Length: 195
View 1 (cartoon, rainbow, N blue to C red):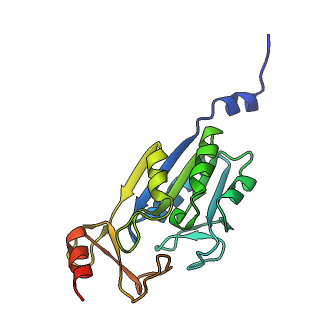
View 2: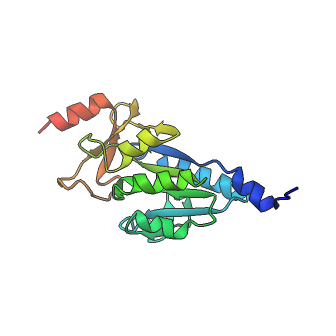
């Protein structure tokens, strides 16, 4: 008879999965990511959190929501480097996934296939309403997708567009309320058609 250790049984019962939290700016994506990661930590799961190194809006190291909730993270320049920090980890959190390279899809699949719960937050569309970075592919391979909404600052309806209110055509422009506003579809169409 073979007797397995408690750690062996725990490892063989791990079920990896990919959870995506997407939506517009100011919709609570990072807030929800932090909530899920804090619950995992409370459950004594081994958690590691990553964000793109270019996102230094609130903190160079922490993931911080617009409501100033924060959780420690590891800034990284490439998705491949995430794998260097995830051995013996139960849960991986990734914020601002739209700023990562397309390799993030393979990294998340590998982690989930290895039994890791992967929780990803990011913008699903850029300021022009186009699918953003690796997010569409991450939504396609996810076990669960949660689309969260902001409130339209013009009419109060549910908002799912991040309207850029400054003159800049670059797809990647880090910003806050001075650069972006959340709009519903109707108000967004009006805003982009007005010269």
